[in-house]
Length: 168
Length: 346
Image (cartoon, rainbow over all chains, first blue to last red; front, side, top):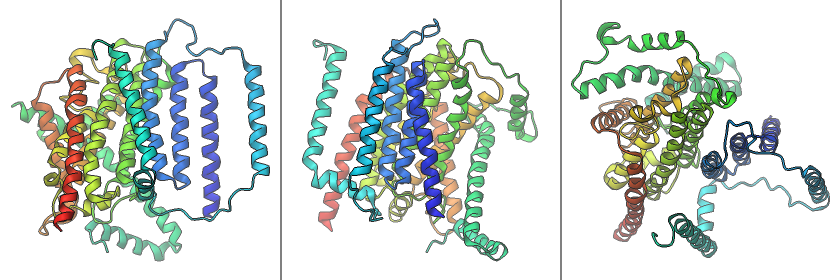
């Protein structure tokens, strides 16, 4: 019963994710593309939660949806609308893209058939948040801090770029 | 075990249903459906109560009488408003982005209603007491930014667009200090679970342990909930009604349904995080304490809203980044030191 519900949820979510992802590529309107991307991210977040990675799912909701909102604002500011020109036009490289997609699918198929997957132990930590926090702030504190310093540098760089050298 | 009045009522209902239906799975399913219906009724009722309550409180604070024509003391005003909105012409402006425009008021209601699943209403009464409770709550409520922007963009109107842009600017900026200020609570509790946060306040409420966080939360909740004096998104005197400008009738009402659901949400959240949730002295049932605190906080939010004049967009943004964010970080640091000193004293 639970297995059935689980696979049903997985199938519906996959359809939603693939459908919205296709929409992102196919839509001629930049804002539609960006909004469909949010839908896709929300689908991925729910998928994470259904696979019992609840913290990761919530992070997906929080960061990506906010990021997309900023992206849309940028898109609206940078593109004209209402003058008939599609803001997200196709670029005529369909053949190249199709070839790439076929190669990618072939590689994924090979991986799925030939690589030995680790056995499913069925074990999911009851306290994913605590374990993640323990890993990030104890075991892997150095990479975590390096990433933090990198992000801080990027943030400062963005401020300098936006305000100009003299003002900042 | 839990012994809240609401929890006991639910349990006894379950026991009554079990012999009638037979299968435990089916009973659980029915109980879940009942819970969902109750939560939706709660959201709908909050809108009904607050359409009148908001105007009455506003009038009371500004020494006016407020609505008093429909029914005794104007009590039927909400019903009259609803009938008026239902019978209004549904104007669909030209040149809009049809799909986004139609979806925006519907989508805006979803996160506003979904967060109710994560509130502990009474001892043991919480729809989804998940491990990442508070974080999931913030993540879900942060989804309400995009529908505003969708409505603003799709309306193809300058005022709506400006309102949509303002939403993104203010809601995203104030999410940062809000999350960091709530981190203090999480550090003291040691868990993100909503029920654990309430239980951690059985000795002392977090408003006394985290006064700075309470202040920051008060301001950021007002901004996130689009309440005056920070309702820049609507800003009637500047941009008419922001993203709602081009909507009429029931579509417009849906925006306000979400807004009033958010208002009650803010009250419940503040009461839960800082005022001990459903806990209180024994002479009143826990359920009553919960609603007293929640409505008191709603009243506080309305009081602030109708007392101060609306701020300016640039001032609230610089206040958020330059005052609230450093203050929240300072609070985080102080909480860390405090926890260490407390452990050392023990």
